[in-house]
Image (cartoon, helix red, strand yellow):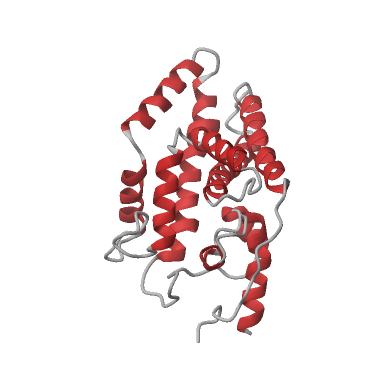
Length: 244
């Protein structure tokens, strides 16, 4: 018997809390970016690298907001608001197409770790090969052109080193972070957790939050997709308790 098989976790009442959490992430990301684009960079200043990590973490939160919108969890009582918050956060995250993400992510949940899963790489490849195929699945020419155009426009007003350090670098680091903790580690290799074929990282909420907003608790996300990211920690506690 699998360690999670007997756990039953009921849906939660989200109300407007999801909207406030989503807006807090989006506003924090925009506000910090606005500040950092005019920040005087000195390469021996440790705050520069702290800010890069902070902006990377918030950038990841922007995508997690899109993800929760795809599941209808940002504003379940207000579907239109839920959808528009998801669309805007998808655009903020390197001009992603919300409709494409929506279709692919639901396929991922319906057919995890199979040839019909757009996020899965068959043949048990290494991290880099899988990440490359993952990028090819989602990055489009239009995205690249939109990012390049935005960079060119912002370059009129802001120093190029600020744009690279606090916008471009966090965007790439966030993409890597999401892939490693949200796709590669949970779904790689041979594992036996049907029907979701996903594993969770060890029970450590601090590590889980800063690594990927609790999405390292990936079995719980697949088993209970009606839980927003901020409820996955509690779900992981319950499944861990049942496995003892």
